[in-house]
Image (cartoon, rainbow, N blue to C red):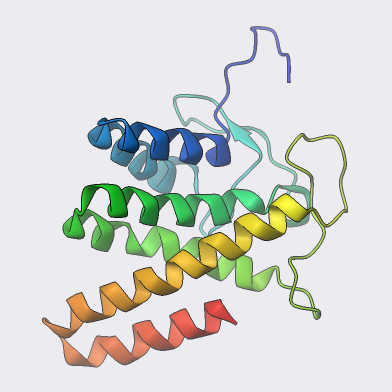
Length: 178
């Protein structure tokens, strides 16, 4: 995408990948800040994302609605949260990020077609719409799989404080994993 001014937007997928690399290279606080920013400024209430956003988070440039956006972004976001946790071991941060990862996986579950794959959407290069892309399917599955592990961890954390919340967390994780 070449815009005037030149390319300088934020794609949640690309930001998630960069943030995991930052965490791996010793910049975990910056990585965590990206995910916190994306969760509070970029993520839609349904857990999806627009195609891209202005760097200050004031809004998207391209938002084509649920079917017109890129479903891989929600999967990569959920995967990235868990990846940063694995690199940092910051349990409190993982628990704080739980609602955002959960929204992403619930969004992906809502995009699942009858054959188990994600429904058609825009490709990650914004060139084609209405297709089912291998990368999108893999990113969605990776996000949901990581979220399931995340859910088990959060369930254990909640169990220490309120036993009644555990069943709800595990049930929702199981539904998202299907």
